[in-house]
Amino acid sequence: MTSRRNFIKKATLAGAAITVGNSAMAMSAKSYRNIIGANDRLNIAIAGLGRRLNAFKGPIAAKESNVNLSYLCDVKESQRLKGLKQFREHINYDPKLENDIRKVLDDKDVDVLINATPDHWHTPGSIMAMKAGKHVYVEKPCSHNMYENEQLVKASKHFNKVVQMGNQQRSSGHTIEIINEIHNGIIGKPYKAVAFYNNRRGEVPVQKSAPVPNGLDWDLWQGPAPRRAYTSETWNYNWHWYGWQYGTAEAGNNGTHELDVARWALQVDFPNHVYVEAEKRHFLDDGWEMYDDMEATFKFEDNKTIKWDGKSRNGYGTYGPGRGTIIYGTEGSVFVDRGSYTLYGRNGKVIKTSENKSNESGLALGGGGNTSTKHVQNLFDTIRGKTQLTAPIDDASKSMAMVHYANIAYRINKGFDIDAISGKMYDRDAMKLWSREYESGWEPKF
Image (cartoon, rainbow, N blue to C red; front, side):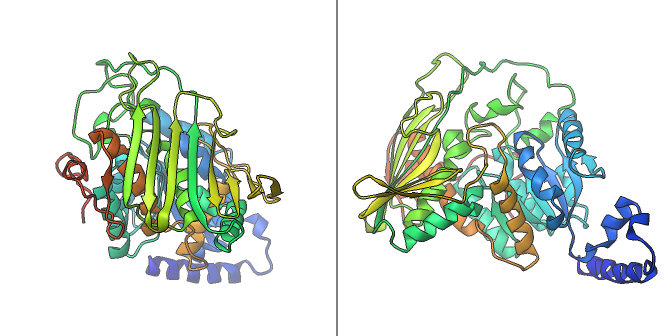
């Protein structure tokens, strides 16, 4: 990479000398893009062109990002073509289309992988990218289980790569502002946080044997997961709810975000105990195979508590909006979500609301907005040495661990204690779910 950039830098200087006295406008857009600032340009590949694609259009198209979209990669042909069509509205060149992420990672000119694949691909694909010399932006959840969580952090240190999880609220201006104020004592000592999410997801089809959809590489879609025959409705969004082969349930799908804000506000690391009350309560005969309603309680050192209240299929707004985090302190409270915050005194009266607001999407599938843009650009700037990550993977993985603890407690039907230093679980049944079964040759190791 160094030799490539040195070469491009020299070419830039030579090109600048040649064009003295001539107008840069006489050059083609592609030629101009390849010269100006090329020594600082990052080549980006996106793997997984589903609903999160909207989040990456802004940061890649922005001139100040100074990046080149080299690849759009997806295991389904129609997704690749759709992604190309969408990006053509934002950039004036065409990236290469690729089915196999391994071929993308073999390209030594690629600097960064944006990993927006399904959950079971997040850690294995990210480690593959680091082994190939790439930095990584990995969508939440960054891991499928605790073993992967641990491996991902180790890999980032071993390969010395910048790895950012897609917990984009860490780059939200108003959230940074109020969290800093909480840390400076504006609500006294924060002792409890409630992270919540509610949605009105409907009935999910029961899986049935079906032919593999046209244009889908089903073997590659499964990737690290053990092989099985295709069933209807799986490749698209419903894999989230079809057991534990691919997804991490609603706690991993959405709870990661609010749990991360809660932990950030309380300045805690691993919990020392977890307990959950969770069940499937809606459309009892449909294809949804895990809980759709969960209340999880996490206890931490210094008598601090975080609660997760997740309702996937009941739209009642217990706390008002559909998602957010409430932080309680000895002298007041704060409500913060993706759009804004409100600060309350101990008497419950509003003290102030944020002037700095965000247009980041809340419940809409896919989302995106100015916070996602800032979060991706934070990765780019960190790679260039201009700043530091707002969500470094060694910290983000601790929020991810809370998701895994909650899911494990649900699956073994009991709470358990945790080593607050190492994150290991003090329960034999829980530790049986520390990892998972992998397809031979696809284990996330290095």
